[in-house]
Image (cartoon, rainbow, N blue to C red; front, side, top):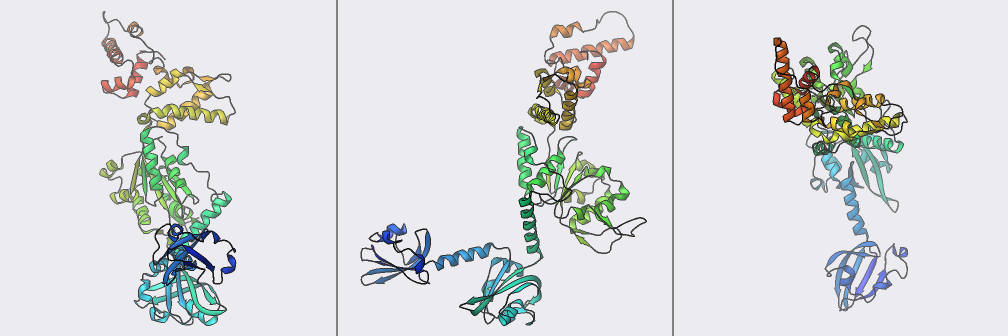
Length: 548
């Protein structure tokens, strides 16, 4: 359909702009008056060609250039541009689209339809529907529309292609009219995978609009809730965000108290499953004889007193299951879980039918699973199934600068929770925190801050060394102790005594000399002496080397 005719003189300047076609009334009388006498190359933004595209007054047109004796004529149509837009829209649709003429001959299909049925639309061009599919004329969506001239909604079609492939689709179809005359039919087709994607999109939209989460699901932590500034922790979170966008199984490995569940919840909250359930379970707390019923559910009559009850895989369908301390699962149970993870289906205890499940598995372990495989405590096939992607969480001692940041954050939260004036942490306390190894990691730090918060006087404004737990007291003078102070504590080496007394003096001097050489740093001293930090602290307290 033509919209505009533009005539040019021999110098390719615009002489007239004529509005034509059924859309002529939509254009204002003087809307193109400004084009008169302009060079066409300037209007086009480039050299005039035999055909091309141009934008005029915020409208797009395709033009065709025809040479005449007095110059050239451009015939412009916006329908050509709209047709290109429509084709691109069809390419992005999730549903399959097929268009047939009024006699049932194939005209068009979008990529989703080709992918759904596995064909090339070029091979179907000009073919009749009955030559393409082995379908009953009475139940064909397209033929029903062409015969009745009425829409068909929500019809389930089961048919075969001429290649013998059986297909089942849910179809919506509509007749295509021009001037009240039937010219064809369009069919929108979806299979189970397409319907699941649409269902997921609808669920997420409803949850977003209502700002709701599924019933029974508490507010989830996100990556923004993870307090950190250490580079190694930044790398972990960046990687976790990337893998959140996949459905791959994830294994999070880290020492106790490093925040494995926090990262797991962050992954779930960042993923497309964020509005679906997140179920966490500590595997070490599940009795072996109840493991199957808890995970797979039960049917009434499966055993004495049993009732029909869904398991975790049913409850978490569409969401995430977090298996904490997965290393505590026995090899016998690993086999049963492995089957579900591989086949994506299971049976309730006492049930006879299979139940499909779409669940993402995130596991966490506080031990080296490779070592457990060598000990045959973890099956190799189970390990590789749950560890498609492995995330190693650093211990707090390996992100030392975060200990101060976390301590301030925990204290601020406690003050807010109990409506107390904001407390600060004394510099000498921060020095102790930096020197301590935190074997219990972030969880231990949180408990220390909570203890100090409760020990602080009601009218205090600062957390001091007196507020710390007893086991941190031997560290309180390390930052300021001097050589003379240490020397004053040394036992006299002369004189008589029992064997135990001599050994105690020797132990005292050895520890004293090592600490002095390391400027009072307990961690370095323990490493030099070949013992753990905790063992050295125990001996220091026993010998009253620093007092407590």
